[in-house]
Length: 319
Length: 319
Image 1 (tube, rainbow over the protein chains, first blue to last red):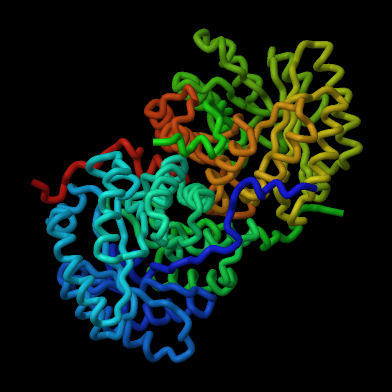
Image 2: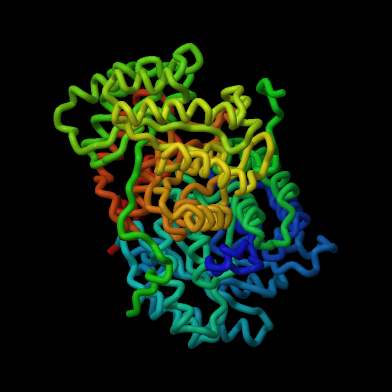
């Protein structure tokens, strides 16, 4: 039979960045113990994850869940078997890159909101002020051998403003490009992206900025997370963030799903014949450990329903 | 800017069949009162739904939730404002089509499993036995002016056998075609479909049987429901089943999601600019009513998180 799925224009391989100990935990009410974060990071790396967003160097008073990021990176440094993994930290300002550098972090991720009102709500700075700071950070990073990537949050919609015009993303990308940041993430912070918008915006951004390495970061808030991954892959992206157990939601919608679950993503890609290098069985064990740590049922479909391959016993009367 | 999404090959319009009072309710522990079913049907029709799978004429001892299907159709007949809506009933045997005919049902849907072991577990009949009965039903239907459609359940995977070869679906389709059933549904009964499989199998089936009108019926058991809709649309299908509130799951996976939620589907299609003719606000009111009837939180993303357009108040300090 003909290779029908070739028409879908899917990548052969996808690279997944695990964000559970950063985006997953940052809105949790209880601060997770550093050793548990260490166990989670070791577990996902043992499952084959090659990129981990481990923590963030931000104000510990504002985000107490991330106050131990120095220790998280010290633990990473002592996990001797994990040499081929990229560990990155989120930073927002000069103090952040300095702290990251002091910990020996090789990759730091800047972030800002595409929407000015969301940006002001989160950080009370305009885009001009932000990029003045980012330029200083980029200079420091270059001098000290730290690679920077950048994220554009609310890239597919803002909970305050609604639709975010692609021109806003283009403008921010130009500014990132000017300070030498060549790897960017379009982040659907509150789960407002739909597949048509993803396909359109990614197509436009790839065409306008062919030199940028693009990542996509989706939340499953309105059930479209994996559909958006599919559209993103069809538009030519093969790098996606995901969070173990689907942890990490929007504080405005209690009970709603958060990040796309890493195990749901790997499960789908496995079925589709797209390589991730991740062992789904080990990943599900890590997700179960996380579920034990947070003490509630997580918004992960495969954790609840099991894999396709977990065939049910023939409990019904069969001959 | 160029019309990038044209490359996605999406339909301009999608037709949705609401299955909540049939597939949604058939595995509920408590039998829903007939009057509540009537209120649900009236509410989804008031929201713009034009196809409703209202109930099934099956053995009331085996499926007590469907024992009142005669009365459900009597109520439909007395809902005078709903003349342009197609109401269909599921049937499995000769007695079923006779009961449907006696109620004045114009459209009846046959169903069988692509997997012989699933079929035997559910109905203890082989495909040969089933189609001998279906031929008699088709003859009765033709004589009495009832239109038949057909469903192929476990079309994308069987919880007992695993993968279902496309040849099995082709074989069943030929048999349906031979008895004159020209509208078929490929049903992912236990949520095992992935987008690549959907695209491949639908492409094959459309090529082999260009005269058949295809419907797709997905469950969100493993989080891929809307991604599968996207793949199905790209393969050329524009008719989908969905269940209000996502009601209707697999009895083997308690806690797992069931059918794709009608409101999640309409929400996504609205955002993508694909017409459904359904008013999402009214549909969400119907889903809330359903949630009140069943007395537990439903697995509907938009019911929990709200629509994209429900912009949050600027509760944070903004200027």
